[in-house]
Structures are given as C-alpha cells and as structure tokens.
Length: 387
Ligand code: SAH
Ligand code: SF4
Image 1 (cartoon, protein in one colour):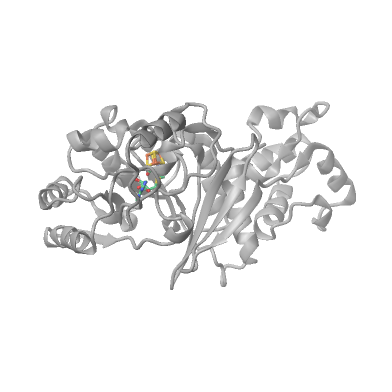
Image 2: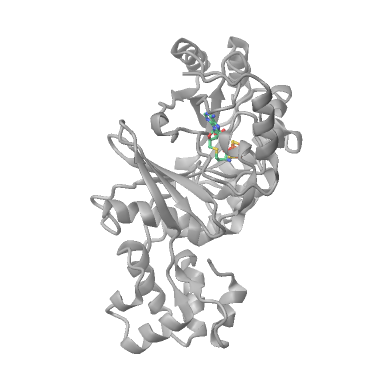
C-alpha cells in the first residue's frame, strides 16, 4: 500500500501498517524520516536506492547505519506490484500484466523507437468513464491505483532493462499516462507518481517527456496546471459536441468549449517555449473520419497551439467499430496540414499482443457490473473482428 500523510504520522506510534516507501513523493519521504527522528538527507539517500538503484531491501542500503536499517524494517517496506507475465511483440513492444492488491491486474506497455523508449502506464483499475470505443472502459471500474502502484510500473520496467539511474543509456526515456484509467480522476496519486518521475533523485525525466492524457475532466486540468507543467494530451476524438457526446460520455458534463478553455488556461501556465498540447483523435470508420470532420476540427483548434495525433482505432473483441484505411488516415491528416496544423499519425504498435492504444484491459474485478452488461450486449449481436 502507498501511505497517506495520516499514515506517515502514525509511524511514531506502535506499528499497525508498514509504510510503502515506493510511492512516497520526495516531500512525503522527508516527512516520514522526520517522524522517525531522522534528518532530511536520509530521504535523498533512500530515494536514490529505490528509484535509481532499484533496491527494495533495506539491508542493501549500505550508506544507512545498521540501526537505521533495522528500524526501517520494522516500520516500512518497499513493495512493487507483482509481474504476472510479460509478452513481447514482434515489433519490440513489450507488455507486462501486473497484479495489484485485491487481485485485479493492470497493464503497462513499453514501446521502443529509434530515438526514445516510451512506457505507457495505467492510473486506475479499469475506468469509470465508459468511452464507447475503449476496451478499458468496457471492463468497468475497480479502484484507483496507489502512487506506489503507478510509479511501480516504471520501477518494474526500468529495473527490467537494467537502466535505472544511468541517464546516458536510459531505456525508458518517456512516460505516457495513456494506459488503463483516467489519470485526472486519481489526481493525488498521479501527481505524487509524476513528481517521482521528474525528481532528480528519482528518475529525473524531463517534463516534456512525461505526458498525461485526459478525456477532459475540466476542473482537474485546472488543478493540474496549478501544481505541474507536464505535457498534456487531450482525447478529443470529435469536432462537435453531438458526436463527442456519443463517443466520450464525459463530454455531456464538460463540453468541448469548456474543455478547450481549460486547455488554453493550462497552456497559459506553461513556459513559452513549451506552449503546446497534444490533441488525440482516434479515427473510426464512418464515425468521425469524414472530410467535414477534419475541416471542422481544423477550425475548432485554429487558435490553440497544438499538435494533432491521429490514432487509427484499434479493434478489440466485442466492439463494432472498424479501423480506418490508410488512405482515410492520410486524407484526414492532409486536410489538417493544409489548414496549417501539425498532424501526425500514430503508428500502431504491439497489436499482436493487444498492447495498442485502447486495447489494454487487464483483468478488472469490476465493481460497476458494466463489463457484464457489455458482454451480454455483445453476445446478443454478431461480433465483428476487424483487421
Ligand atoms: N483516460 C485517458 C488516458 C487513457 S486512454 C484518456 O482517455 O485520454 C489513452 C488514449 O487511447 C486515449 O486517447 C484514448 O481515447 C485512446 N483509445 C482508447 N481506446 C482506443 C482504441 N480502441 N483504439 C485507439 N485508441 C484508443
Ligand atoms: Fe477511460 Fe480513457 Fe478509455 Fe475513456 S478512453 S474509457 S477515459 S481509459
């Protein structure tokens, strides 16, 4: 478990729960050491052991006295979630199935590219938002991941590649919160975990290389802008409210105009040289892929510094949507280009191991019973598998 401030404060008391140091931000770790009567520099030492050396055994922390190590063993632990399996795609992508407390499994995916390695991590077990084209949404929702479970995915991957702490030959250079879940609905834990990704004594990633993707939880975009300036991606998928209401149900609460206003406010808080967001647009055959949609999108985004990332829909079992052709993708991109936008097509990676965008489903002990309803509905109609 990752600990709250209240739990950290209990440390001086007879121990009920061991604090999992893996998920503690640098500030919380300093606070933890203060409660056991230790100086702040212990936090730096232990952060480095955990996140740069991948150590989860206090006995290996050789610059701590034996007495302190014994004390730490009594009150604390370093526990990452458990890797159940690893699958490797023919294209080099690799996916970990990771069991978290309570028995559900989440997924994290590593995508190697020429000049970088991107780890796509999950923030919740399932998702409560139920976008119509997303496998995670169809799995229903179990709970938020703890900060330890979120940063644990990076810890696992970096340790696997043996590249913790060595900036020069770091394998995981980028992290995207684009796996299972809506990160802004698990705000505090996500912010703590991102703090560790950026912290020099932990992973030391650049803010440009940590991207949070949201379906549009407007008040939380504002809160994020107050505490962080990581890169922001907005899952738009439609150029008007009528269509977006169908695809992304949270649009009924926070329609496009409100969403784009919050994006503008986020941009205003960013330093000038980084003032750009990513707009994600998943293209589905005959749903949101017409020329008019592209023109409408270009117009909608005309005053927002952004790059548009076009994602071909990735099919999953039970979904009726179809992937668009490459011709359509190129045509859509060209319309955006001609209107002066930067638009790129996200190449599908790892779809042979169901690791592509929107295919992450894990095994969610669904508390919403949505997955049952979805399975029933998809059994009642012919299931189409689209290649
Ligand atoms: N909940 C957040 C982050 C996770 S989803 C969000 O919605 O932004 C990450 C990205 O994958 C989003 O842009 C999402 O819309 C996209 N996605 C979901 N299902 C998809 C599918 N089946 N094919 C392609 N992209 C998909
Ligand atoms: Fe949740 Fe994002 Fe999937 Fe929508 S697209 S259901 S917000 S994970």
